[in-house]
Amino acid sequence: MQDPKGEPGIAAVTDRRGKLLGQALYSPKSEIRLRLLSTGDEPIDAAWWRSRIAAAAARREGIPATAWRVVHAEGDGLPSLIVDRYGPYVVAQLLSAGLERVRDDIVAALAETLRPAGILLRHDAPIRRHEGLALEVVTALGTVPETVEVSEHGVRYLAAPHTGQKTGAFLDQRENRALVGAHTRPGGRALDLFTYHGSFALHLARRAREVTAVDTSAEALARGQENAALNGLANIAWREANVFDLLRELERQGEAYDTVVLDPPAFAKTKDNVPRALAAYKEINLRAMRLLAPGGVLFASSCSYHVHRHLFAAMLAGAARDSGRGLQALAWVGAARDHPELLNVPETGYLKGALLQAID
Image 1 (cartoon, helix red, strand yellow):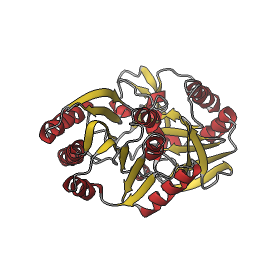
Image 2 (image 1 turned 30 degrees about the horizontal axis):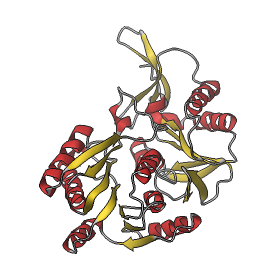
Image 3 (image 1 turned 180 degrees about the vertical axis):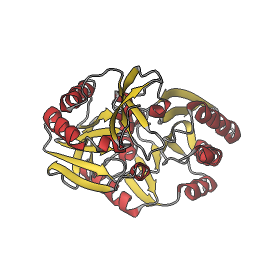
Image 4 (image 1 turned 60 degrees about the vertical axis):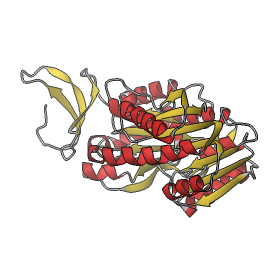
């Protein structure tokens, strides 16, 4: 690798004989020193970034929503770059020191390609610390409001670009929310656990008679109530509680639900956390299975990359066995199509889910 100064940026990568292997983002302080951008020797300039971002945007044409991911890092061949669109606004994350060095080129490319009213840089992700970068939230172009109304599959909600999870909302579950909504029993009871701002609950409430949406954050539940009002939905009860404790309580009370959603935060941040995470996933899924009414549907999800698909499936099988319920797999799913999975970069396939139906 040609690296005379040892500073972050774009570096040519060569083998021991000096043959060019490609060009990569170089981060000298990171555990991942090199992130491949190209196998050629073309200039990696503003025009290059414009072309790559435009190609990624073109692959998203036809998404039935006003918010979607434009660039999914390695999934679009642009490692450590996240770009999400919320209506006329763009929220981006530059998550490596090499990428930060070309910030001006990327902001210019986003402005020229996407023509947004504002660009917000959500640089508060902890991973930036490992790159030796400051944590900050800064407006790079125009203005971006505190909340932006989003519409997906006929449901409206408020995203929070400056303060919300990720870049303001969980866009990766968009297609799964529609899937679960379509399988919600009309006139039935539904339970949405780890609801956050109620994105799943809103879809459930369009068909269910009543929905209980649960989270430990009063602030998140308040935003969920705003979202329900935005859709004219009055059949959602917002409950502040610990999900683990509540599930045990509901089981003791003999409650039953026609639809249950389990969309918890990542339980396994590292490989070392996997055994404990699997135990936690099994605990909540087992109890949720016991709460299902006959013919009821459970959507179980994990966003922990380290809990791979085969481990997730085995956990669910163990929970089903211990719950004493017969459960049929209706669908195995991943992230929405604007969060593409690159087959040779398994980290891009972090989200996995299963739609299960009780048949006993």
